[in-house]
Amino acid sequence: MSEEPFRPREKLIEKQKYFQSLHKHTYLKGPADKLTSVAIPLALAGTSLFLIGRGIYNMSHGIGKKE
Image 1 (cartoon, rainbow, N blue to C red):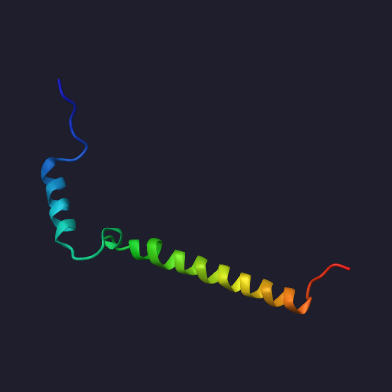
Image 2 (cartoon, rainbow, N blue to C red):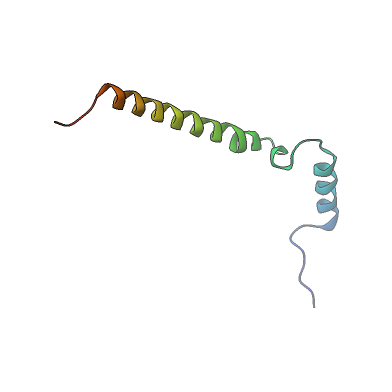
């Protein structure tokens, strides 16, 4: 006795044809994928660059030193 599949084979074939027909990178095919793979890393990179720049500025001007 074999186990029933989670989804019918026809639905899987439909999804495969849809995703294979798109001419984008694999990680950008879904509607919310642009947020998770582009916007969030850019925000993290921008924040870290800002904090590093502020730290270098503070060190070079002696701001925030404890006695």
